[in-house]
Image 1 (cartoon, rainbow, N blue to C red):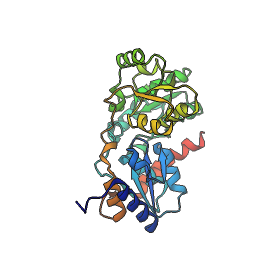
Image 2: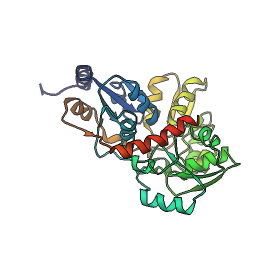
Image 3: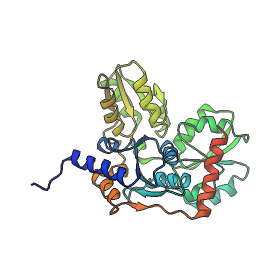
Image 4: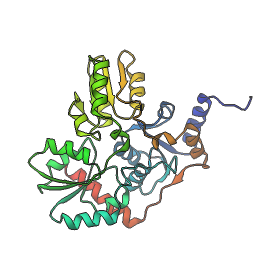
Length: 308
């Protein structure tokens, strides 16, 4: 029993090691709260990669999924980038491969190819511009072409299309399995149970779910909305860890998950001990990208910055 460490002991050891070994720890907000507490930066995937690029640390540990760690490496090629759990992937990012996208580009030769940040680095090499859920509407509005091929999430794409009806969109039938678990019927039941609550929805949800929301936006947007508004009750339509994080940050408010099943199992693969092992050099996986892949994927991201 003397060898059993408390959660606080493990956190303290991680904090000691990251200072000693010049490590920056990134934690996506879908991670558990004990991991967020030891992270240098928390937030959405692209925002984390930007923070990593600004950091002077020589090593970056991404507590998230593979495409997020790849984005960090794209923006920080000289840093050592570690994915905390090698098995943590993103089903949406893996739904389309380069051969399928090449076929789609032949089918829609006059369309600008817009990819969601939730795509592999290889897929980004074939795209014209990358977007996040927070920036998609603004970026696509600023594209001169009025024909858009949007990949891979048709639900996010449909929400963007509603904001930009003057443009023509083509989609593929991709999406986030976690957000697809939430249905219109769940919304009606949640509103009946909590009639005074505001409904905050991520645009990766089905269109009929988003249509009933009081606010639709990125994970960071949802959190900011709940923290900045005076309303006391919120139904949260995204990964359930956000409900927990908001309850910590706003103890005077009430947060209800739209669905108990809205859990990203890939995000939950990373444990605090995994992070400790990464700091010790005995865990995780170093992300290596070929220069050609990294440079072409970076052009896709840089175009996003140029457009807004």
